[in-house]
Image (tube, rainbow, N blue to C red; front, side, top):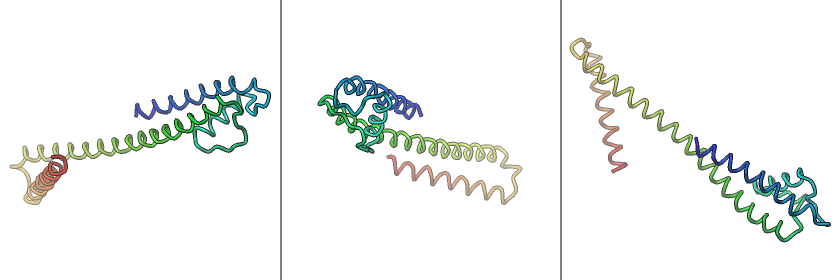
Length: 145
């Protein structure tokens, strides 16, 4: 989750900093299409997200080089954001799985302590749960070791 927040903040800083920079670079030029901060942020957003409408474009060499850099940065940041979001989803799913496994182990331990008082079907269920847990641990060891 921290990575996702970090990437979002980084994305905002890149858009903010690049918008200001392109405005300062382009607006003084006499043929400039980027003449306001809104134009600058519009162009940066379109470039970083790889949309590239083309309605406003930099006319200076420095502005165009900055555009090339922003295109690569945009692709990278989008890839990182998708990866970070996927990692958050997978992490939450793993935690959920570990929680279920932990609660199953706790239930088995409780039932073992009460084994003298269990009915026949409860003992059979306990045996089945232990077998399932054993098989799962065995399969996890094969996968990871």
